[in-house]
Length: 454
Image (tube, rainbow, N blue to C red):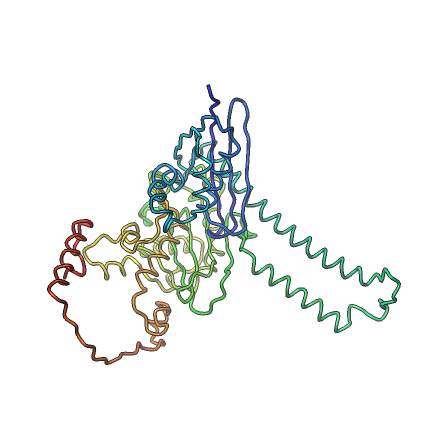
């Protein structure tokens, strides 16, 4: 009989895109093998795929593999969706290079694919997650070491000239650190090195006050009013009944451009998570070593204040945030931020229809992500796509890039109204019939009235 091997795979990404890592935990007989690696600029889904590829490659070709992943994207992709992707020749498929690589790696192998809930305390999944973060840390450290080595090389090259190995009497006694030319050269070198460091992929900065505050710096320099697409996860629905925040995620947008800056924090709520775990999948065990809100309040407040907060059902998030900041002895967030509620926007644009985040994702054909469990940063990323799609429309100059706060302040310029007389071309009977047939098919397929049928 062939050998049976159990394989746990996981990916991690700090910024998404950003610094990422993958991990594979292989168990067979009495042996446990640990693999990990990472990339400077990647995404969470790519790291999930990379973990599966590398884990399978490390196993004998004739072994029976039982693979556990907490990514439905990987599990359903390789067992269901991939057949359709191949038929349409991978058109519009994200990460096709890794999907093709995974498909090729699986050929001729005996594999069982299983999904497991992440961050639920399962030993195998937790180890794979730990390895993925080790891979990210190793990649970050290797990058830093490489930069340090390059700086040492530059320094040694300068020393080589100053040492005058050929006895040419270059004149170390006449050139000093105070020499203007030497100072200018040093400043230029430092500027180049700083530029190189700034242009590399952003790594997540662990705040000095607590390692669980994940701040990602901006990679895009844009000037204008900050908008923060924000989401929270909580222990329940009622802030008045002592429910608490357990996760906050926010990403920065300026002039309708995502800058790459984000903040992400898990928070120990000082009470049981309870039944809400069924929504977000975050357990009491996972939160046991996380900071309480008072420890992170000042840093989070500094990041959010002055921005326009964009949230889906914003009243829910703002009530909880105001309550938490007041408990920490800080002003309410609503007193220092403008707020835009995308749920209210959606109800205004689509009255009488479903306007949940999932419904809007389908309506605006936003690329699907695994939302088996809600996550604050993931939901914020999805909401940014929905908000841009929902508020895109027809723009006049750059007016739609103005923030909610600017529009309500009365300082923004008014849209230009153009008085144009346009000819009206009536459709033929054949065109009307074709249009009505199309509308009927649309309504039959989607089960809702078609806008163009009105």
